[in-house]
View 1 (cartoon, rainbow, N blue to C red):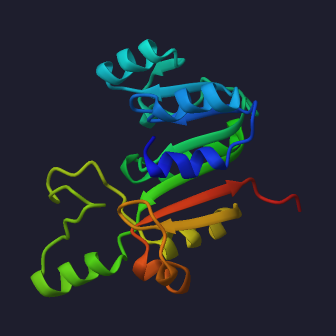
View 2: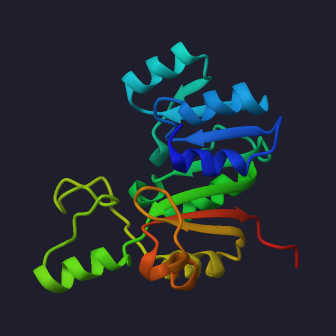
Length: 200
C-alpha cells in the first residue's frame, strides 16, 4: 500500500464507518476492509477507477465532489477521508464543513505550497514550481486552491475546527527531523485529522 495511505489507515479504528472521497482505485478501503473490518464507501468520478474498485469488492459511488455531499445524512460516518484532493475542489471550506457534518472526524492531505523546493523554484526561475508533490504545469493542473500549512491552519481556526493531529512528510511520504522543527518549510505533504468545532 502507498505510504501515505498506510499513515491514514493507522488513524482509523477497527470497525469504523469510513467514506473515502476521491477514492481512486480503492486501495485504502480494500486494505481497511481486509485488516480493520471497516464499513466503507468510496466516491469517484473516473469510470476506470470505479471498475477497479468493484473488482476489489469496494463499495463505490460515482459522484462529482463539487456537486456536494447532500445525499448523505448527518453523522453517517465515523471518519471521512480525502487524500490530496481538497486543493482541487471548488469550495474547500464548504467541503470541510460537509465532511464534518456527515462524519465525526475527517482526515485531509494536501501538497504544501510553502515547501522549500517550491519557494526556491519560484525565487530562482520566476515560474510556478513543478516538483514531485506538484507535478503539473500551471495551465493543466487540477489544483485550483494550492495552500500552505499556515493557510490551512488559519482556515481551520476561522471555521472553529479542531486540529486533532497533524503530520508532515516529504514527497516520498516519509518523515524527517527537520519537518518537526519547521514543518511549513520542510514538509511537502500535510496530513490533518480534524474534528468538529467544540461546543460553546
